[in-house]
Length: 338
Image (cartoon, rainbow, N blue to C red; front, side, top):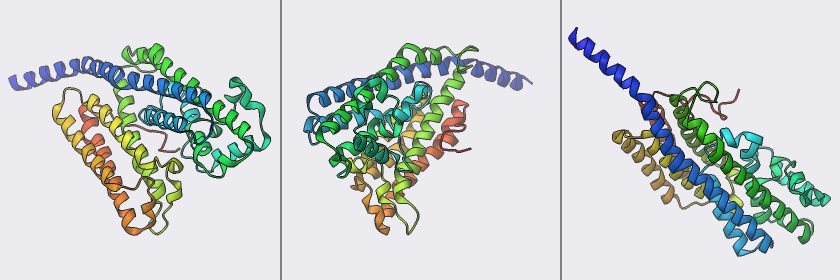
């Protein structure tokens, strides 16, 4: 009986400590992961817009460099697709991908063919389909041989500047919403907010982690892999700018940071998760296939599949080890369908 009472007391104290622990993890995730990365996104997209104002020629070295830096910053936060990213569809306005119906080139062709004056007003351009806005539209405009040659140079310049200005505005709004509003809701959950408890906040971040891993395995790798005997290398993300593998690496590094912060003081859990990320990143670095063109051959596909399996193993470890340790589950996400 004495042992039973002792166990019950231990359990009560453990449960009582959970909200405080979760609150501490929330602060760490916000202060060391979310807010700095959102600020970086705002700063790099502002620099991209400045570069476009200075030189809108599509071959401009400074413009392309600024595009790459800003795109990197987006990929590092692309797993945070809840809250401020959902408001006014900011996430889609910045990144409409995967584009399963090729709506981005279609939208750009339409704008250029009509020399649509919607590009002359930031407010009006914000009403354009998300397929014609954001990083992937800019990727086409800068790197696609067909799209980058359509229409007149003057209109392409105006369109490019409209896109970069829109990206910068959207990223600034996203960062500001996080710092001035949403971070506070996550720090102080309660009945009047979107989260009722600290555990619900942790569950949101845990879902961001597992969904981010799923995006890398099933979309960034799975789409170009296609089916056995039917590879789809042209479906690789941002292949025109040669960024497909780079996006996987940037995302994994950012997700590893989030994973470590979620693990909190559990050093053993953090080490187990880190081992999985180290394995996946090592395999990515060995791949030497920037746009996954190798999936067109059986041997090349196998190498990408090995990386995919390593990422899937991290997600399995998150669901089987981290979720129970945190007392949360991944729940549904946007990839689950109806």
